[in-house]
Image 1 (tube, helix red, strand yellow):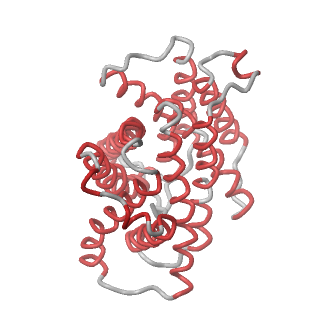
Image 2 (cartoon, one colour):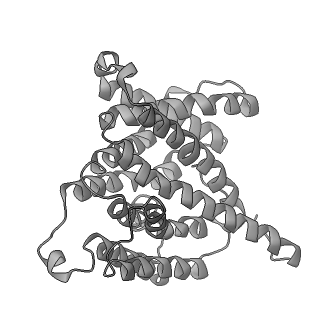
Image 3 (cartoon, one colour):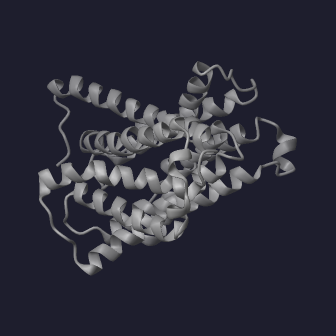
Length: 310
Protein backbone atom coordinates (compact mmCIF):
# COMPACT_ATOMS: atom_id res chain seq x y z
CA UNK A 1 0.00 0.00 0.00
CA UNK A 2 1.21 3.56 -0.61
CA UNK A 3 2.86 5.25 2.33
CA UNK A 4 1.01 8.10 3.95
CA UNK A 5 2.56 11.51 4.22
CA UNK A 6 2.52 11.75 7.99
CA UNK A 7 4.93 14.19 9.57
CA UNK A 8 6.75 11.30 11.23
CA UNK A 9 7.57 9.86 7.81
CA UNK A 10 9.51 12.87 6.55
CA UNK A 11 12.85 12.17 8.24
CA UNK A 12 12.95 8.47 7.21
CA UNK A 13 12.11 9.43 3.62
CA UNK A 14 15.00 11.89 3.68
CA UNK A 15 17.29 9.03 4.64
CA UNK A 16 15.83 6.89 1.86
CA UNK A 17 16.66 9.60 -0.68
CA UNK A 18 20.19 9.70 0.72
CA UNK A 19 20.43 5.92 0.29
CA UNK A 20 19.32 6.18 -3.33
CA UNK A 21 21.98 8.83 -3.93
CA UNK A 22 24.55 6.44 -2.46
CA UNK A 23 23.29 3.71 -4.77
CA UNK A 24 23.61 5.99 -7.79
CA UNK A 25 27.14 6.93 -6.78
CA UNK A 26 28.03 3.24 -6.56
CA UNK A 27 26.57 2.61 -10.02
CA UNK A 28 28.43 5.64 -11.37
CA UNK A 29 31.72 4.20 -10.12
CA UNK A 30 31.17 1.15 -12.33
CA UNK A 31 31.96 3.20 -15.44
CA UNK A 32 35.46 4.46 -14.51
CA UNK A 33 36.27 1.17 -12.80
CA UNK A 34 35.00 -0.79 -15.80
CA UNK A 35 37.12 1.40 -18.08
CA UNK A 36 40.17 0.82 -15.86
CA UNK A 37 39.89 -2.99 -15.91
CA UNK A 38 38.49 -3.48 -19.44
CA UNK A 39 41.98 -4.18 -20.78
CA UNK A 40 42.61 -7.03 -18.32
CA UNK A 41 40.28 -9.65 -19.79
CA UNK A 42 37.95 -10.13 -22.72
CA UNK A 43 34.48 -8.62 -22.10
CA UNK A 44 32.81 -12.03 -21.85
CA UNK A 45 35.32 -13.19 -19.23
CA UNK A 46 34.94 -10.02 -17.16
CA UNK A 47 31.17 -10.30 -17.28
CA UNK A 48 31.28 -13.99 -16.36
CA UNK A 49 33.38 -13.33 -13.27
CA UNK A 50 31.06 -10.50 -12.20
CA UNK A 51 27.92 -12.64 -12.54
CA UNK A 52 29.45 -15.78 -11.02
CA UNK A 53 30.86 -13.96 -8.01
CA UNK A 54 27.64 -12.02 -7.39
CA UNK A 55 25.66 -15.30 -7.61
CA UNK A 56 27.95 -17.09 -5.13
CA UNK A 57 27.92 -14.21 -2.66
CA UNK A 58 24.14 -13.75 -2.92
CA UNK A 59 23.32 -17.46 -2.55
CA UNK A 60 23.73 -17.68 1.25
CA UNK A 61 21.30 -14.80 1.77
CA UNK A 62 18.68 -16.41 -0.48
CA UNK A 63 19.04 -19.81 1.24
CA UNK A 64 18.83 -18.15 4.68
CA UNK A 65 15.73 -16.11 3.85
CA UNK A 66 13.86 -18.40 1.45
CA UNK A 67 15.37 -21.88 1.65
CA UNK A 68 16.43 -24.04 -1.27
CA UNK A 69 13.88 -24.58 -4.04
CA UNK A 70 14.54 -25.31 -7.72
CA UNK A 71 12.12 -23.40 -9.99
CA UNK A 72 10.04 -25.19 -12.59
CA UNK A 73 11.42 -25.46 -16.11
CA UNK A 74 9.01 -22.76 -17.33
CA UNK A 75 9.95 -20.35 -14.55
CA UNK A 76 13.64 -21.04 -15.07
CA UNK A 77 13.22 -20.32 -18.78
CA UNK A 78 11.68 -16.97 -17.87
CA UNK A 79 14.68 -16.11 -15.70
CA UNK A 80 16.97 -17.08 -18.59
CA UNK A 81 15.15 -14.71 -20.95
CA UNK A 82 15.44 -11.86 -18.44
CA UNK A 83 19.12 -12.54 -17.75
CA UNK A 84 19.89 -12.56 -21.48
CA UNK A 85 19.15 -8.83 -21.58
CA UNK A 86 21.49 -8.22 -18.64
CA UNK A 87 24.29 -10.37 -20.05
CA UNK A 88 24.11 -8.54 -23.37
CA UNK A 89 24.24 -5.17 -21.65
CA UNK A 90 27.23 -5.93 -19.42
CA UNK A 91 29.17 -7.54 -22.26
CA UNK A 92 28.56 -4.44 -24.37
CA UNK A 93 29.58 -2.21 -21.45
CA UNK A 94 33.00 -3.79 -21.02
CA UNK A 95 33.54 -3.92 -24.80
CA UNK A 96 32.50 -0.28 -25.20
CA UNK A 97 34.69 1.02 -22.38
CA UNK A 98 37.74 -0.09 -24.33
CA UNK A 99 36.78 2.37 -27.05
CA UNK A 100 34.90 5.24 -25.41
CA UNK A 101 35.08 7.30 -22.23
CA UNK A 102 33.36 6.57 -18.93
CA UNK A 103 31.54 9.92 -19.21
CA UNK A 104 30.18 9.09 -22.66
CA UNK A 105 28.93 5.73 -21.40
CA UNK A 106 27.35 7.34 -18.33
CA UNK A 107 25.66 9.96 -20.51
CA UNK A 108 24.25 7.34 -22.84
CA UNK A 109 23.08 5.40 -19.79
CA UNK A 110 20.56 8.16 -19.09
CA UNK A 111 18.75 7.19 -22.31
CA UNK A 112 17.88 3.83 -20.67
CA UNK A 113 14.68 5.02 -18.92
CA UNK A 114 13.35 6.25 -22.26
CA UNK A 115 14.20 3.00 -24.05
CA UNK A 116 12.62 0.96 -21.25
CA UNK A 117 9.51 3.15 -21.29
CA UNK A 118 9.04 2.63 -25.03
CA UNK A 119 9.41 -1.13 -24.66
CA UNK A 120 6.94 -1.08 -21.76
CA UNK A 121 4.42 0.85 -23.83
CA UNK A 122 4.51 -1.91 -26.44
CA UNK A 123 4.93 -5.03 -24.29
CA UNK A 124 2.87 -4.23 -21.20
CA UNK A 125 0.78 -1.31 -22.47
CA UNK A 126 2.22 1.14 -19.96
CA UNK A 127 1.07 4.74 -20.52
CA UNK A 128 3.89 7.27 -20.46
CA UNK A 129 1.98 10.52 -20.06
CA UNK A 130 2.99 13.81 -21.70
CA UNK A 131 5.04 15.10 -18.75
CA UNK A 132 7.04 11.91 -18.37
CA UNK A 133 7.55 11.52 -22.11
CA UNK A 134 8.75 15.12 -22.39
CA UNK A 135 11.20 14.63 -19.52
CA UNK A 136 12.57 11.44 -21.07
CA UNK A 137 13.08 13.19 -24.42
CA UNK A 138 14.84 16.09 -22.70
CA UNK A 139 17.07 13.60 -20.89
CA UNK A 140 18.05 12.12 -24.25
CA UNK A 141 18.94 15.62 -25.48
CA UNK A 142 21.20 16.13 -22.46
CA UNK A 143 22.88 12.77 -23.07
CA UNK A 144 23.53 13.60 -26.73
CA UNK A 145 24.93 16.97 -25.69
CA UNK A 146 27.49 15.28 -23.47
CA UNK A 147 28.41 12.63 -26.06
CA UNK A 148 28.96 15.24 -28.78
CA UNK A 149 30.58 17.67 -26.31
CA UNK A 150 28.15 20.45 -27.27
CA UNK A 151 29.57 20.53 -30.81
CA UNK A 152 26.69 20.85 -33.27
CA UNK A 153 29.02 20.20 -36.18
CA UNK A 154 30.14 16.94 -34.61
CA UNK A 155 26.51 15.94 -34.10
CA UNK A 156 25.59 16.73 -37.70
CA UNK A 157 28.56 14.72 -38.92
CA UNK A 158 27.53 11.83 -36.64
CA UNK A 159 30.87 11.93 -34.89
CA UNK A 160 30.18 9.02 -32.56
CA UNK A 161 32.84 6.44 -31.87
CA UNK A 162 32.50 2.68 -32.13
CA UNK A 163 32.38 2.33 -28.36
CA UNK A 164 29.32 4.60 -28.13
CA UNK A 165 27.49 2.46 -30.70
CA UNK A 166 28.37 -0.77 -28.87
CA UNK A 167 27.12 0.69 -25.59
CA UNK A 168 23.91 1.90 -27.26
CA UNK A 169 23.32 -1.65 -28.53
CA UNK A 170 23.72 -2.84 -24.93
CA UNK A 171 21.17 -0.28 -23.76
CA UNK A 172 18.68 -1.51 -26.35
CA UNK A 173 19.00 -4.96 -24.77
CA UNK A 174 18.94 -3.66 -21.20
CA UNK A 175 15.77 -1.70 -21.91
CA UNK A 176 13.91 -5.01 -22.18
CA UNK A 177 14.70 -5.91 -18.59
CA UNK A 178 11.87 -4.15 -16.74
CA UNK A 179 9.10 -5.05 -19.24
CA UNK A 180 10.28 -8.68 -19.26
CA UNK A 181 10.18 -8.75 -15.46
CA UNK A 182 6.60 -7.47 -15.54
CA UNK A 183 5.65 -10.07 -18.11
CA UNK A 184 7.42 -13.10 -16.66
CA UNK A 185 7.47 -12.62 -12.89
CA UNK A 186 5.35 -14.97 -10.79
CA UNK A 187 4.73 -14.43 -7.06
CA UNK A 188 8.25 -15.36 -5.94
CA UNK A 189 10.19 -13.01 -3.61
CA UNK A 190 12.32 -10.43 -5.39
CA UNK A 191 15.51 -11.87 -3.87
CA UNK A 192 14.77 -15.30 -5.30
CA UNK A 193 14.13 -13.84 -8.73
CA UNK A 194 17.34 -11.80 -8.55
CA UNK A 195 19.37 -14.87 -7.59
CA UNK A 196 18.08 -17.08 -10.40
CA UNK A 197 18.44 -14.24 -12.88
CA UNK A 198 22.11 -13.94 -11.94
CA UNK A 199 22.53 -17.73 -11.93
CA UNK A 200 21.03 -18.19 -15.41
CA UNK A 201 23.11 -15.24 -16.59
CA UNK A 202 26.20 -17.09 -15.40
CA UNK A 203 25.12 -20.11 -17.47
CA UNK A 204 24.66 -17.89 -20.55
CA UNK A 205 28.16 -16.52 -20.05
CA UNK A 206 29.66 -19.98 -19.62
CA UNK A 207 28.15 -20.92 -22.97
CA UNK A 208 29.39 -17.67 -24.51
CA UNK A 209 32.93 -18.23 -23.23
CA UNK A 210 32.92 -21.90 -24.15
CA UNK A 211 36.34 -23.53 -23.67
CA UNK A 212 38.08 -20.16 -23.41
CA UNK A 213 37.29 -20.23 -19.67
CA UNK A 214 39.58 -23.22 -19.21
CA UNK A 215 42.24 -21.88 -21.57
CA UNK A 216 42.58 -18.54 -19.76
CA UNK A 217 45.66 -18.13 -17.59
CA UNK A 218 43.82 -16.85 -14.53
CA UNK A 219 47.02 -16.58 -12.49
CA UNK A 220 48.32 -14.02 -14.99
CA UNK A 221 45.33 -11.70 -14.49
CA UNK A 222 46.42 -8.50 -12.75
CA UNK A 223 45.39 -8.18 -9.11
CA UNK A 224 43.90 -4.74 -9.88
CA UNK A 225 41.58 -6.31 -12.44
CA UNK A 226 40.42 -8.99 -10.00
CA UNK A 227 39.89 -6.36 -7.29
CA UNK A 228 37.80 -4.31 -9.72
CA UNK A 229 35.63 -7.34 -10.51
CA UNK A 230 35.07 -8.02 -6.80
CA UNK A 231 34.10 -4.38 -6.29
CA UNK A 232 31.62 -4.48 -9.18
CA UNK A 233 30.07 -7.73 -7.94
CA UNK A 234 29.67 -6.59 -4.33
CA UNK A 235 28.96 -2.87 -4.50
CA UNK A 236 27.41 -2.19 -7.91
CA UNK A 237 25.49 -5.47 -8.12
CA UNK A 238 24.51 -6.85 -4.69
CA UNK A 239 24.54 -3.71 -2.50
CA UNK A 240 22.80 -1.53 -5.08
CA UNK A 241 20.11 -4.25 -5.34
CA UNK A 242 19.24 -3.89 -1.65
CA UNK A 243 19.22 -0.09 -1.87
CA UNK A 244 16.92 -0.07 -4.90
CA UNK A 245 14.53 -2.61 -3.35
CA UNK A 246 14.24 -0.71 -0.07
CA UNK A 247 13.92 2.70 -1.73
CA UNK A 248 11.25 1.59 -4.19
CA UNK A 249 8.99 0.52 -1.34
CA UNK A 250 9.11 4.05 0.10
CA UNK A 251 9.50 6.32 -2.93
CA UNK A 252 7.98 4.37 -5.80
CA UNK A 253 9.76 3.02 -8.90
CA UNK A 254 9.55 6.22 -10.98
CA UNK A 255 11.28 8.38 -8.40
CA UNK A 256 14.02 5.80 -7.88
CA UNK A 257 14.66 5.33 -11.59
CA UNK A 258 14.81 9.09 -12.10
CA UNK A 259 18.05 9.19 -10.10
CA UNK A 260 19.67 7.51 -13.13
CA UNK A 261 19.87 10.99 -14.65
CA UNK A 262 22.46 11.97 -12.05
CA UNK A 263 24.94 9.31 -13.24
CA UNK A 264 26.90 11.55 -15.67
CA UNK A 265 27.28 14.24 -13.01
CA UNK A 266 28.63 11.70 -10.55
CA UNK A 267 31.04 10.35 -13.17
CA UNK A 268 32.33 13.88 -13.80
CA UNK A 269 32.99 14.27 -10.05
CA UNK A 270 34.61 10.83 -9.77
CA UNK A 271 36.89 11.47 -12.76
CA UNK A 272 37.87 14.84 -11.28
CA UNK A 273 38.63 13.20 -7.92
CA UNK A 274 40.84 10.66 -9.71
CA UNK A 275 42.84 13.48 -11.25
CA UNK A 276 41.44 13.22 -14.75
CA UNK A 277 40.26 16.81 -14.77
CA UNK A 278 36.91 18.22 -15.78
CA UNK A 279 35.35 17.82 -19.24
CA UNK A 280 35.22 20.78 -21.59
CA UNK A 281 32.95 23.66 -20.64
CA UNK A 282 30.68 22.84 -23.60
CA UNK A 283 29.94 19.43 -22.05
CA UNK A 284 28.71 20.79 -18.72
CA UNK A 285 25.39 22.26 -19.99
CA UNK A 286 24.42 18.75 -21.10
CA UNK A 287 25.10 17.44 -17.60
CA UNK A 288 23.02 20.32 -16.19
CA UNK A 289 20.10 19.40 -18.50
CA UNK A 290 20.24 15.79 -17.34
CA UNK A 291 20.23 16.81 -13.66
CA UNK A 292 17.27 19.14 -14.29
CA UNK A 293 15.35 16.31 -15.94
CA UNK A 294 15.82 14.19 -12.83
CA UNK A 295 14.10 16.85 -10.72
CA UNK A 296 11.26 17.15 -13.27
CA UNK A 297 10.62 13.41 -13.12
CA UNK A 298 10.84 13.52 -9.32
CA UNK A 299 8.15 16.19 -9.10
CA UNK A 300 5.94 14.39 -11.59
CA UNK A 301 6.26 10.89 -10.17
CA UNK A 302 3.24 9.04 -8.97
CA UNK A 303 2.59 7.35 -5.68
CA UNK A 304 4.85 4.50 -4.62
CA UNK A 305 3.78 1.00 -5.46
CA UNK A 306 5.14 -2.48 -4.85
CA UNK A 307 8.88 -2.83 -5.38
CA UNK A 308 9.79 -4.40 -8.72
CA UNK A 309 12.46 -7.10 -8.90
CA UNK A 310 16.01 -5.79 -9.25
